[in-house]
Length: 173
Image 1 (cartoon, rainbow, N blue to C red):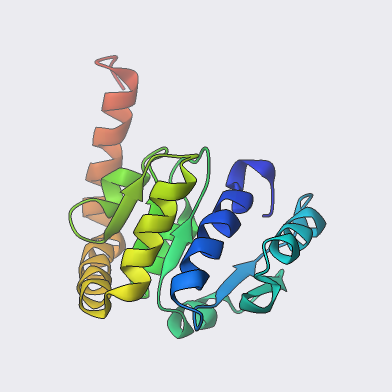
Image 2: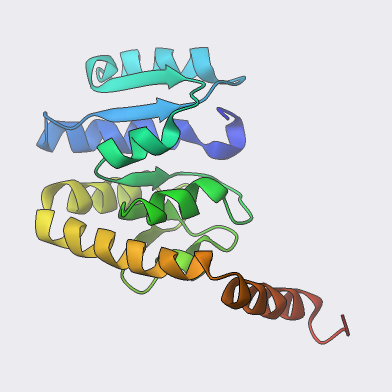
C-alpha cells in the first residue's frame, strides 16, 4: 500500500543519496495507493525517476523478492508486517525503521534498523547495505535463518504468547 504511513517519500529521499554514490542501484516499489502519483512526481523532482520503478499492485511479489538484493521498510508505524517476514524468508537483508515489532525480528544481524523519519541515517544504512556485498550477504543469511523459525508453528505460537503477555503487562490471558 502506498500510503502516508509507509513514508515512501523518506525512502525516495534516502535513495537519491544512495544513487549518487551507486548509480547502478535500482529501487522497485510495489503497490498502489493514495500517494502513488505524488511519489512518482517526487522521484522525478529528485532526479531519480530512471532508477525507481513503480511496479503497481503485483501478485508475484515472492518472485520479485527472490530477484531483489535488499528489502526496505520506511514506515512511520507498523505492527509486524507480513512482507518483512516474507522478505526475510527469501533471504533478503533488511533496512527498516524501528517501528512496531520490526526491531525484534531484524536486530541481531538480519539487517539495519534506523529511527523513523531520519533521512540521513536511513540513507547511510541503505548505502552500507548497497555498498558492502559481504555485509549484505551475511545479513541475508541471518535473515533466512531467523525466518526459518517463523515456520515452526509451536515456536511461533510460544513467541506470540510472550508478545501478548508483554503487551498485556501481567494481565492474565
